[in-house]
Image (cartoon, rainbow, N blue to C red; front, side, top):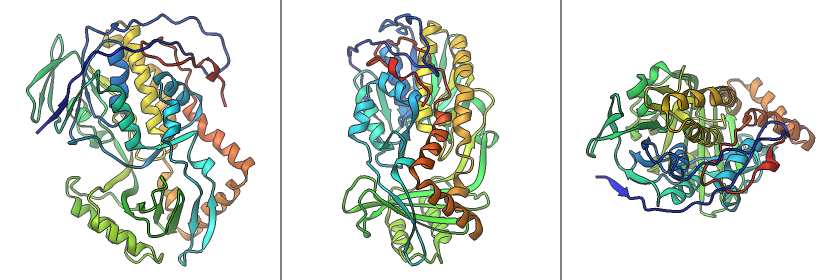
Length: 445
């Protein structure tokens, strides 16, 4: 069964922005007209963040865009994601959602490391962890869908079954829908991209495992948390309970643990629950019992390896990868911000090349690859950071947290973490549908 929404005509304002790594003058960009890509019929796989983001820009340039998503509806909730630095802000401003994100931000407070007896040991201040603005992934997905649903065809409950490139397009078959031919296909379907598998080969060739796993799910807010979190660590495993949105009755559980690479069925939730429960068993923190109860009851479990995608190129013929499909990292790699920046660059290069995918995809790769890899590198130590493998390393991490409690040191650390997110001289493509000038955002923080 598929659910489809059909596009209608919509008007968009055109505004100009500019962004760069230094305060330099920029030439007036060529103005894109709203139908600059009207000759293109584009299929986007994935309706999380990267997919609706590229659909946002392409539809405003006149392209006919279809987004196919295997889930039956938009996915709600999920982990919080943050944006930081002038490049993220410039793209969000050009999309017209910078202010809206601040209206739905988490306003997360302190995160506290506790001992086995639940005594508080170290506070990690909110201004260090949440970037310039932090929102739930599900809320961001809903916002992007709202901004695109009238100009983009969304097909839920379906997935690409095959891709066959011809001289003039890509013949696509689906698990449920009728076959169609598209000019271009964008794989924006995440770390385990089906599009990447079909066009580039099995993910085992591109996915690099980092010896850790992460799980997340909702649980009752039995601790009465209010936009705060409590985190307990034993060697090689961490359990955390958090409340990001202030809802009195609801909290979220997260589990990070060290492990050899596990063989499990991604569709078998019961098997995944057993794996997580076994890794939690015997932890001394008293609240692990409630986490286990919530794990047993949840019907919305996230479970995955901490891993990165490493692929030599982002395009194959008329198929191009975007976001986590091309340079993903499970956690800590500023992946959501990178996806939005990459979507803007991909759309801009398609307009600059007048829809010539060969020139546009090559320019997109040249612009975004180094930037994306730099952001991705930040995630390499995520597992050991959250769940150090020994008591000595746990103590070392906690000492670092205490130092970061100083605003002076935390400010320095924040600038370091923003460096990768800001390491791009963002072009001004003058795209149709840009909102608000960004000329004041072209300084390095």
